[in-house]
Image 1 (tube, rainbow, N blue to C red):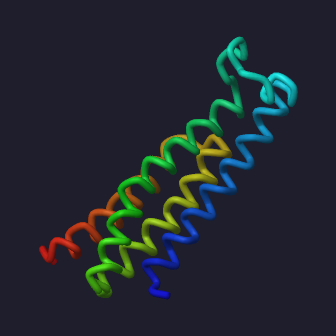
Image 2: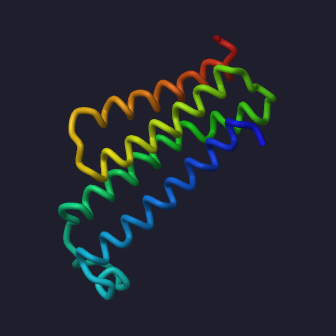
Amino acid sequence: MSTELTMLAWSVGLLIALVVIQAFAGIRSKGLVPLANNRDDLGPAEGFHARMLRVVDNHREGLTMFAPLVLIAAATSVSTPMTVLGAQLFFYSRLVHAVLYILGVPMVRPLAWGVGLAGTVMILLAVLRLI
């Protein structure tokens, strides 16, 4: 398996881990029974639970851009040092971003997000054969 596809697999694994943490945060915050019901009267998430919902949404958003590009690159046999680096930048920066988000670290987190976006753009440019 290519490095790009490996980084995609690890990125999905990260999403799974974040969803599990978010689910436990929800159970801790709202209780198992309310979450197991229809959630009509659950009320908004607060504190750590709300933060976990945001980090899951943020990572999912990043994956919706990254994953198709990696799959296009694999389908068209585009694998260059730039796509490898882009995929690595995406995954490792998203891992750092998630940790910073979970810990509530301000100001630095957007830098990690930007590195991940840069990695995605690198793959886009390579797939479009612009670099």
